Image 1 (cartoon, rainbow, N blue to C red):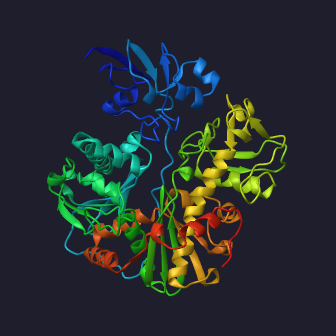
Image 2: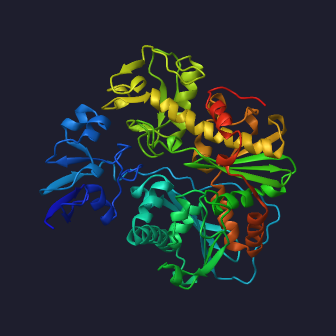
Length: 535
């Protein structure tokens, strides 16, 4: 097969690739990052690069990229195979993601293991988008440092189903996904030891929590059963081994503990959330919600646990939103409309020019459009000075015009984007309502809603309530608990008693598959409406 030279900027890396290899595949091979929420299927339009010289745009690109960008050489990495030597610029490769590492946890029923003087351990929250690692002193139970980075698997798809599909293609795909995540855990562990002055040979334990797909991919398990109904995991029980057998180079002699999974889309991160907040010991009715591509929902009725997974999709992570992006430098994180004909007030992560909207701003935008009458309860946009008729997407709200806030181009929020938010929030609310039905509780019974994860931490609860993302509780009952999964992982690292608790929780929790619920379609349809739905 004939090969051509591809130069990747700004790194300057030169690689020779065959004519049948896409640029996206080449970028994956060398371990660089470019956004690819759809996993290379040509549907998200996010794997943007600048080619020089540029090949002719494909039909997909003319639909997903604006004319101006096409004229300056912007192309989609998944759409082009190199037939001559060329150069590709990967924009924003140095942009720092805003990753949530801190959290709060309950102090009840917690016992530290004895006999570990001079020993240390690593607790890992293995998320679909991010990986957070914590270094702890096992003898004292205190955290020494933490480090975080994007999950390097994101280039194979933003959501778990894209990665499962990639792993199912062949054995090499599964091996590559496993190696990428283990390499990142090694990198974070080594970094923590070097920065803290802790010898790596003093690491005697490592604990991993994550959703079921991340768990399976890290262990190199067959994920095909997670990609097909009834979505059964290969492993539910806790798994203990050592670093060498797992494939970790930074902790070869350490005991490695993978916490148990509940179901195909409810993993050990949800159990760690329950453990960190001790939802199983609650005296009242409380909800725990971790919103991501799959929103995990837990309802505790005075300690009796009910849970489900709601397929929210990637709207709240920006993946299916036209100008959506992760929470990183350049992302609009909050938005307020003071006057409907004026530009909205915005705050941008990093303080520079805006490039798109992250999840918290996406919710703010829909809430503010609804509050100002620019969107009705059914989600239909209404024309105004800033709700313009975009030729490709129909009506769209002008979040930022060219030249506003030093932006070089427009940032729009389209009618389709509103629909994507309705589908995402409808899934979360429907899942919550079904758990309330099976547990026989009403909204007024709910004493608290605990929001876990980055989205729950940064979202404006009043905006969430306005679009009825949650049951209509009093605002003060919504409590952000940060990285609750990470907090649970730290408990599992220093306490075998906590491991016993979480393994018992896995066996007694009541899991519900939403798709098989008799009234799911009707409940979901009602839950997409942008107004409070009362019992």
